[in-house]
Image 1 (cartoon, rainbow, N blue to C red):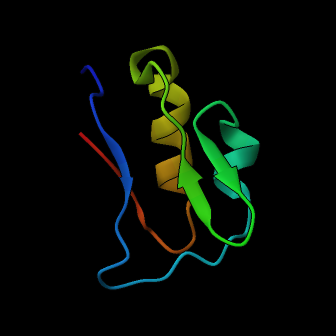
Image 2 (image 1 turned 90 degrees about the horizontal axis):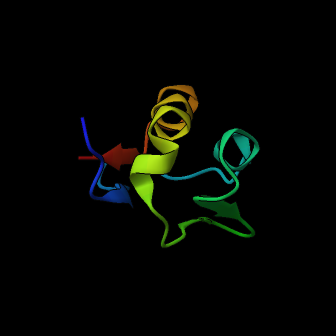
Amino acid sequence: MAISKVWLDESNDECIACGACESVCSDVFTVNDKMSVQAADYNAFESEIKDAASSCPAGVIKYE
C-alpha cells in the first residue's frame, strides 16, 4: 500500500504531544507544543508511519 497522505485527525480526540510518533519516525512527525506532519516521501517511511499511528495513545494519526 502506497501512503500518499498523512494527517492529524482531532475531530474526536486531542493530540497530547507525548512524542511517541516522533520517537518512531522523526522524519515525518515533529512534536513541540503539538504534533505536526512534515512533508516527506511517505512511501519511504510506510512501516514507521503505520507503527506511529498504531502506537499513538490519542489515536489521531491517520494516513491513506
